[in-house]
Length: 163
Image (cartoon, rainbow, N blue to C red; front, side, top):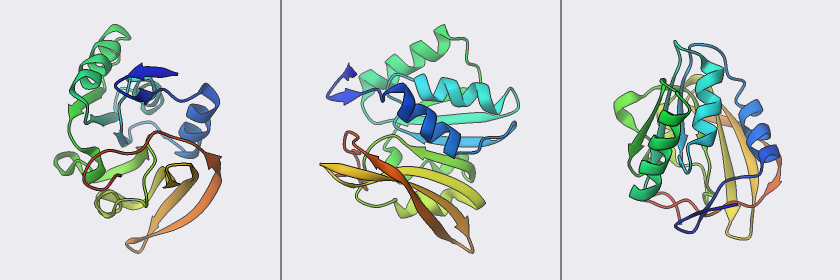
């Protein structure tokens, strides 16, 4: 569904698939690239619990404000919206236990892999504008072991490592 500024919110089943694939645990620190409406950050915030933390980046200023307002309204106290080019990660809070990218990227950006803890999981739709494979990667010895969770279509990632 459109949320403005040529962006969309994913259908609930897609959000579920991505969130479940993260294998979240209480107390984890998660980076979300693409806050959008704040919906997925709210879900992740609830799953990691009060001792966990969600940093969600949004490159579009109006959507960053929208996500902040929605998280405040939902009383999510452990999710923080940062207006920033998340394709570069967010080094100030790194390293992360989990990273989720909510927009299509040509490949998983290296800065995200660098900011992921050893044994951490990253989820990202990777491919062309027309369609992507949802990739789940686990960081092992500095690199990623990856496999596909299926075919999806997302809006393109903006920023330095996007389209």
